[in-house]
Image: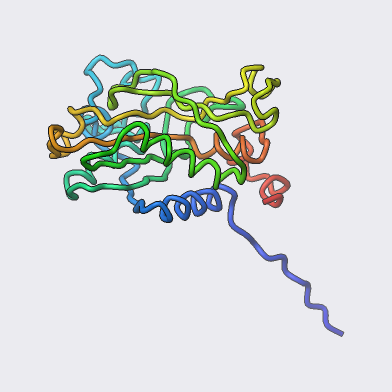
Length: 246
């Protein structure tokens, strides 16, 4: 008699699955995977990205500063990889940078002190906001598996000029208005824009010759939209009833 118990097979966590899918989609568009350190200097996280010295994002309520290490912090965005990559690579540049980021803020259904983000960066001699819109439209349609409309709204971020907030058409009501999109027909998903000339200079790239775009998006945010998840904390609490659905 065989008393051997059948072992259940494990599988990838949904975050890993989404990161792999994101890498694959952008790889098909000619983007390379890049990485940066989770603990980094103030220079790469803020200074070189055109954040003014008194910018609110530097304040203690937003940033985890590392004790006994002067001007060292846990990165608040994966944008810290931008300058590092530009310092060691010449245009044309096409990279995505997925990874963990850290913000000193209260945890609730839509906010976590640690979460995942991916940065996109493209620099050459001809890139425009139109290029950005085409890249994002292709990504969203492949990631969500349906036709998605993309809308830009003017906004401000220190490291881009002009800056835009990027909205996508609501998946539930397809633009007619519902509780998910607050009856607007649109859902805000990320911030983006054309790389600021000061950022190009900090990376050793001539802004008179080259231009490009950058964008950053929370991966959990995309997962919540794709799978209809209403609490970001479900990704991290280790509840197998949640994880085993993927």
